[in-house]
Length: 450
Image (tube, rainbow, N blue to C red; front, side, top):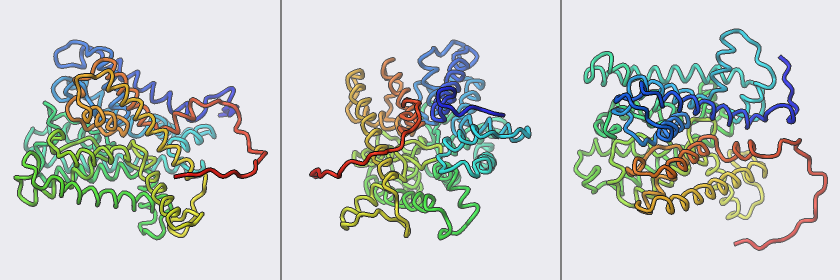
């Protein structure tokens, strides 16, 4: 199949990805607006359906109506499918179907997959697509199997299996949607090691990024991993460790969260709390009852998010890692930024700076607008909600259902922006002309910084 790569005749890869997400969100909105999608048989309305569809496709988990009690089985199943499509990406699913049908994958589709997975080249992207689909099915099936040992005895075979599948897919895709009802999320399982650690495992695995998972599967030895995988794993480990220690200190004596729990339940609850702000959205503790330092730490973790090429949002672990390495290089007075005996290019550092700046600017603008439209809500509640939407986390201090129509639409836009990432949005909106090489270099100038 010959497809023109002329930018004047074809959409750019970033634009195709944006439009694919918009298409799935639109279809999901129409389906959720159907009366059969709700328990009471009434249409959920355009705004509520759009918000829920966007939250599911962008694997966020923020909800304006209770997922477990408001939506019918049909509606919940639509949400589940939207989560799966949003987590894997429409391009991944369509390419997988084409592979299964024995169709040849053309150059343009390979370029699209390269963009979708944030790969450096098109070499091996079809193989990566296969690994992504297979690994997703394996992890979600394993998670559902393990969760069924808890849910089937409590809910019966039919409901137990459905609940296990729903929450396994939601956890691996870092969506945070639950169908427990009444906004409970997983608070009823705060001391349950099986549910906690299965969900934790799925969240971490889904948030590492598909390229890292494939790299781990292939090499199984840290020293042989790619530079990207090494940085992701190190930053992820540091963030999880630091978050665990700080949350444990901040919440140890808080009677509204873990203060009155036995030590094992405390450790289990804090382990979950250290993981879930990394774009997962599930909670076993009441977010509104956290201490102020814990809320601030949660907001920071939500802004950072997961890793590139995963289902996670935020500015990503590698971006934060590169900024830390840059600061370290400046403190040491060296020009080259190094990691694992490799030099990081200036272009990569500039891209990381751009991601942080654009992300912070978008969060600030949306937060400012929400403080104007949502006058009855507290400062920290709005900031928490804004960062949760941008990081596609889904945690809330309980104000999502109280948002005005304008507020819901702004959060919808922010979830979409957070899922696709600032660079994808910028590239999609940029001029489609050919990228011109810099032919002239001006003399270097000096600017005082700091």
